[in-house]
Image 1 (tube, rainbow, N blue to C red):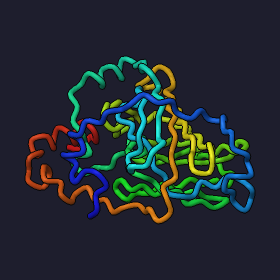
Image 2 (image 1 turned 180 degrees about the vertical axis):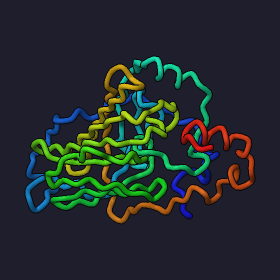
Image 3 (image 1 turned 135 degrees about the vertical axis):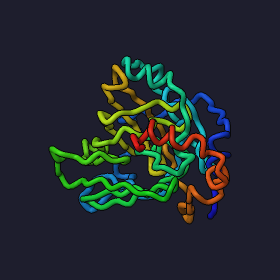
Image 4 (image 1 turned 60 degrees about the vertical axis):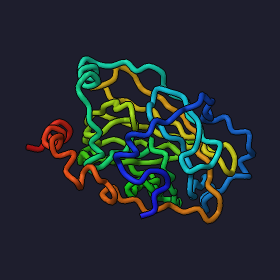
Length: 269
């Protein structure tokens, strides 16, 4: 396995990332002529490519820097969050990083990691390939609506559409078993609803904005905006396997936390 930065989950969770204050792109403020950006056969913006992005350790804070080593990534944090009584209780409860057991990260945490992603797009479908855990997520853009009944999952169910040159992705149907960000461990519930907006800043930069609503945990919506940077030609996603070199898990050092963690996060006896 080729590892971009950290060789194990233990090392990854132990690394302290220094974030420098930097403004993030505001959706809809592109100075680039619309003719300069890649487009699909139907004329809509084409976001295909391999993209570097910032690590969102804490969704409330600003930061800059690309996890891939490229330059130009940034994020604008949401500021202080407002919790419901349940949310405040969950934030005060003892926490343990469930990903150390190689369990799924969930959609929001996967979107907040510093590992690159690749977008593959057609007029009716967008697929995102994540280097983290080598997983994928598909967004239909063919005009369909959400089903009335959605099976709760780690990654949720998405639909997408365009508002001008902005791609809007609406996702719900989550299982509430994962955190919002990488390090701050802000909780989620099965009421989580996400709206993402992607717009080109220029041919090599994309403005990404995420709006998060979870009325069981937070009393108001959470917004975070970022700038992604296109990686240079020839850069590809690397192989990533959680189990490989995960010494703490393989050597039994986490056994004393397993039962408590599984019950807390997954209601598994």
